[in-house]
Image (cartoon, rainbow, N blue to C red; front, side, top):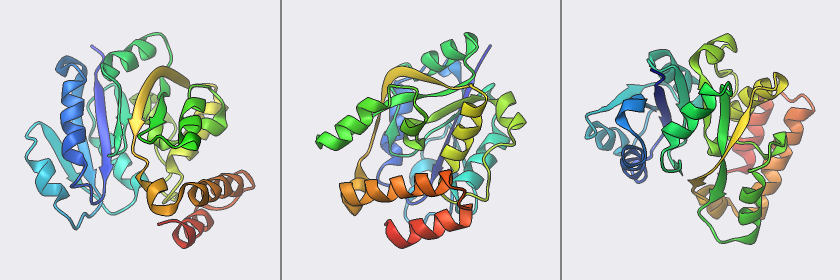
Length: 230
């Protein structure tokens, strides 16, 4: 039977992770979930204590960096499908069945369309655009499912990327024409936009996207991120 391993990288997510773990339990069938793996990247808040209260959740420790954290989770995963999820993104009801149905149809990698938890017109538009398969509309907040076999074949996430690791993997999948957008909504927090300012952050995200397209190295992208984004 096909099963999903949910992998969540965290860093100082004590305020959000409990709600997410409860949401996952209430939105899926235990028979479809091999395990939920949370990989902590060195939290200094109460994240690990909060996660430890969920006895069915596997808590792993790692050095900081989502690519490293998610690779560690994937290496421990027992499921046929890996589902990478951010700590502030809430997948739709029956997300497990939706993913398994796609994989059984031969669509072995993809994401959900996404909407922000915000009423700002630009974020509503940006979310609406994610229903289309255009490469420019992809991002890690939409979550990412991929067969474990294909993930291994692609050598997982490139750990040189401290940021943009999701998009690097998505680029590889698009190059193979192996990506589908499930037409159900995942809801994600707009907290980074609220912290940095919507237009300022959007400008810097576009700049990172263009820099990568022009061949910038992972180090250059990370330095730009550290300089411009909180």
